[in-house]
Structure formats: C-alpha cells, structure tokens
Amino acid sequence: MAKVTMPQLGESVAEGTIGKWLKKPGDHVAKYEPLLEVITDKVNAEVPSPVEGTLTQILVEEGATVPNNAEIAIIETAEEAGAGTAQSSAPAASAAGPAATAAAPSPAPSPAAGAAPATAPTGPVVTSTPPSAAPAPTPAFGPAGSDERPERADQAAAIATIDDAALPGDPDARMTPAVRRLLREHGLTAAMIVGTGGGSRITRDDVSNYVETQRTKTSVGGQIVGGAAGAAGAATAPNAPTSPTTQAAPTGNGPAPRSTAPATPAATTAASSGSQKISFPEGADEVLLPMTQMRKGIAAQMTRSLAIPHAYVHMEVDVSGLVKLRESAKREYQAANGLSLSYVPFVVKAAVEALRRNGTFNANWTDAGLLAKRRFNIGVAVAVDDGLIVPVIRDADQLSIHGINQAIADVAGRARANRLRLDDFGGGTFTIDNTGWLGSNLTMPIINSPEVGILTMEAITKRAVVIETPSGDVIGIRPVMNVVLGLDHRANDGAGGAAVLRDIKAWLEAVGPETAIY
Image (tube, rainbow, N blue to C red; front, top):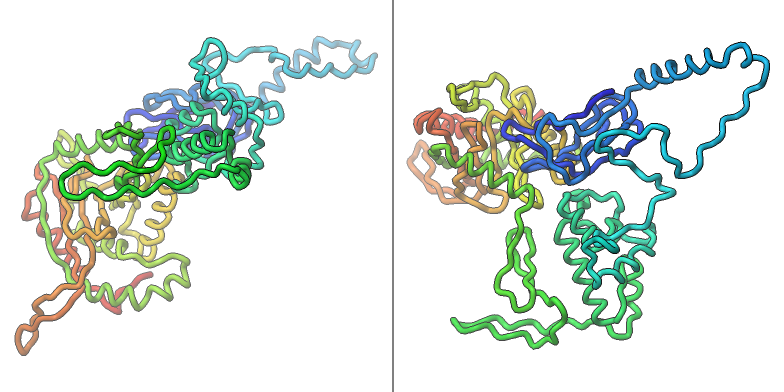
C-alpha cells in the first residue's frame, strides 16, 4: 500500500487543510494525476498522486487541518492488487481438490444491495456513496439531536427537490472549506450558485448574496425559490420586490439621513473594501469580517517578515526604449502567441542580470548566515480574490523574455483558477512585485522571508525630464518608471542595494529595437 502524506508547500508552511478530494475511494488514479486540493497559508494547490493504483482509503476529511507528512490517504498499486488476487485464488483452488473437476461450478451469489463488506476497513476511513444511490442534499442542521434551525427547514426541503441539472451553477465548483461549510449551514448545493471567483470558484460573497436574494424573495413573494426555478418564479410573481429609495449622501458633520425605503428583514447596505464587498445588517454600524485561511497566512508571514530590518533604495528609470519596443511588437506578439506582451518579463530579465553581478541578493537568510543560491528562482506576486500569492518562476536566467512572459502568464492564470501545483512554490530566491498596475508610484514592499530582497515596479508615467544633448540640456517628456528595492539589512547594506538598482536601471534603459524577445 502506498501512503499519501500531506506535502510541505513552502519553507515556512507547517500544515495544510484538505480543501477538496478530487477522487473518492474505489477510483483509479494515474501517477501524477491530481488527487486532492490542499489549502495552506496563502494558496490552494492540487496534490498529485505519487503512484498509479486504486484509492482505497481517505484518512482525513475535507476541511481538516493536518501537519506536514501526516498520512492522509492510502493507494493500492496495481502490483499489490495483482498479488492479492493471486494469493486469494490459490487457496481456493487447492481446497476444491479433485471434486472440483467432476462438477460444474455454480455461479457465486451476488451480494445484496447495500450489504456490508466482508472485511470492514479500519481507521478514519471516509466512504463514498455511488452516484446512483446518492441522497438528496442535506442541510447541516438535521433532525433530532442536531443544531436544527427551524427557519431553514422548509428551505432545505425545497432545495432537496431541485435537480442539479436544472440549476445554473457547477456542482463541482471549487471553494474553500469555509465556503463549503457555509453552504451546508444554509442547506445549499454548489449547483445553485454561480461562482464569481477565479475559475468560477464560489466565494463567501456569492453564498451570502444568494441567501439574501432568496430571503428577499421569500418575504415578498411568500415562497422560497432557488436557482433556475427561482428565476422563473420571480418573473411571474405578482408582488415583485421593488428597489429601495437611494439614501442621500450626508452633508457636513451631521448624521446621515435614514433611508425612506420600507424595511425588509436583514436589509443591507454595501461598502467596498478593495475587491471585497461588505454588507452591514440594518441598524449596525460595524461588522466583523472573519479571517480567511489566506488572510491568516498572509498575516503570519508578514509578521515574520517585518521582524527583518528593512532598508529601501529607490531610482527612476527612463523606459522610453522599452515602451517603444513593446508598442511596436505587441500586436504581432499577441497574434503569434495568443497572449499580451507585458512589461514584467523585461523587469524580471533585468533583475536576473543584476543578480548575476550581485550574488548576495540572490540568497536566503538563515541563522547560520547567508545562503547564496546558484539558481535564479524569481517569485512573482499575483493578486487573487482573497489576497496575494507568490508563485516561483524557476531558472529564470535560462529563459528568454518570451519564455518568462509565458511562464508568468501560465502561473498567474493557474493561480487565479486555483490550479497551482506543488512545484510552483518554495525555493524562491528573489521576488518582483508589479504594484504599478494599479497606478502606484512609490511602494515600500515587505520582503518575502527567507529571501533577502524584493523589487517593485511602479506605474509608467510621462514626466518632464532634463535631457542632456551636445548643444546643452533640454526638457523633454519621457515615460518614467520608479523601481524600489527592499533589502534585508542583515544580509546587505544600502550601497549594495544601490548597486543592484543601478544595474537594473542600466539594463532597462538600454532596451531598444535590437533587444531580443525570443
């Protein structure tokens, strides 16, 4: 039997949460085929099967958090299955003896449907119900002996009668364990909700908005509807909900005027905090936003990283040549490769060339000293729905600008679709963060420990600059980009940081029509 263990997704990651099993007991799995999703501090990653065989036991349920290297499943390989069959058939043949040849064997009786197996598996096994016998979705608040909530009983009964095929959502949609638990609490299924997250992932806001919509329909139309059936019911309901009157904006320092709309149960107002929508119950002036798994991980990592004595160096880069090259090549590049040509791979290439000359920045900090790295594994910060993750572009020095651009597009797309792999994390030697895509001009980045340096590329803006010419200085309009280097002052000093930025600046300002993209 091959044992599947919880992998370590990063140097500082000590545990992982089972997000979703992609296979069930009895399923055949190929080697390296995705077996489950694991949620760590900051990411959802698919874990491949280490061997080919049959998944026999799931030892850890979805939503459970276990430490690295803990056993989470057992797979029976094809060799083991063949050996077991041969061993079980040999005693049967010897027991039959000569009499077996005198009479025709009678067919073995079929086991009764639902009969218990001859040998019950041991350990915390999670069994799977065949699809044909799968029960209707059951709310988390069940009958006697559980935390049943009477106000949801009718809703759960109505939900159980709806066929997933008639619903707009994906029954196999991805979501975090917290969102999955929220679905169970409301007696919902994934098929009822259209996910708006990356890769159609269902978010907490999707569930909350759906529940609020159904609650409003119930209070107005007198019935509970859901999914496609709910849409049809709303279209013909005689008492369709009306939009509330818009609340007037407050003036001066006085209290804001109250809405004149008729109050409905759990009426909400919405505010925006980044990409997250916040709903305030009527009459509430504040609301607690629980920490997601990703935010907990970011908080822990940033707390560790801020223990590092940071120092910063900033320079302005004239990217006139870079902008002209990209503008002249982007249409042909898009047509030939099916993706846009970004500025990021140019900055990655410039950073790699600078790190070649300044090896103490391509390193990790340890208590024993600075651990210099031969390979250039560049982390690229990617913004996702719940926060920020930093997958790694390995051996970036071996890639062309086109190769780096492809690698970044691939890993960013998989990150937003929650399709990252184990080898996308860990082993980073330096990080680049494109903070300028939102328009920032100056950022003080936090180092991704245990690395000792991080570079931000800010927005490219047109500025009036002084240009030296043989006939004297003139003022011209040039596209300029700020770059900021955050450095670990234990490993390097400001002079070393300035040397790195000087080399990055020189490389970027030297980009021209002759710069090779491929």
